[in-house]
Length: 294
Image 1 (cartoon, rainbow, N blue to C red):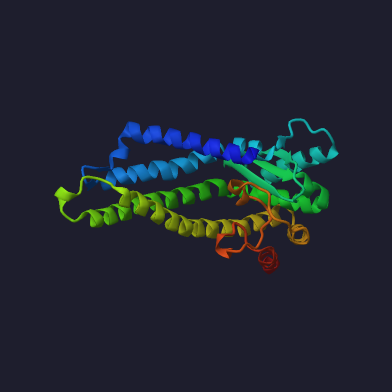
Image 2 (cartoon, rainbow, N blue to C red):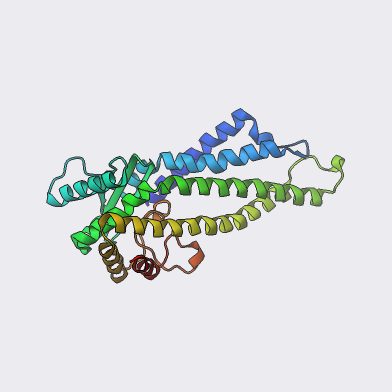
């Protein structure tokens, strides 16, 4: 329940901020007097599409900590925490990035994720279930996978992709809505005074349809980044350790409890009902790709 409330409040706050921006800039007047102003519409779509994605990126560490209850290791309390911090510090140095914050969140599922606004301001978190279920070599490989996500700039890359497709979806859906609404009202300029119910219904339906297609595109890119992160984890920790970690995940597979916005940067992937909407490739495909590299 806490995650749902936090998600709703965060998105409401983002929408309010972006709503103020488009009003101040006058971008919400893209459809006035029966005419569609394409430059204003593009600006409107850009603010909501790209702006929303980047605000989420800037807030990503706070959202991750709040939604998962992750506790950052400020001062290691035991040997296991000390090892985690030192391993991430060493791998970050190897990858040429600033040392991410290291956190543990309580969840029975063995998983981990990385997030943050840039390569030098990131968070790497592991679940208590992962620490309990995996050997130290396997955990090291998982940490290498997550550090590689950070080093590869995957958070920023997927944010850019998400922002571009969001902008496209908003832009095209309003154009389709306008065309349909004009057709319903008649082609005469005198007969069309502005957007009616046809515009809003058509825009929403088109946005929903295009949003699904956009998700397919974003998830395809996410799956490709997972292969790269696996290769990076193999480079930082060792190929056999990375393979062993993925094989252990196969044995322990359960439905992921990570929030949706963090799932793309987790380590474990599942076969869903719709493979095209999977953020991760199947584990067997990832293991096969690592073996081929040898």
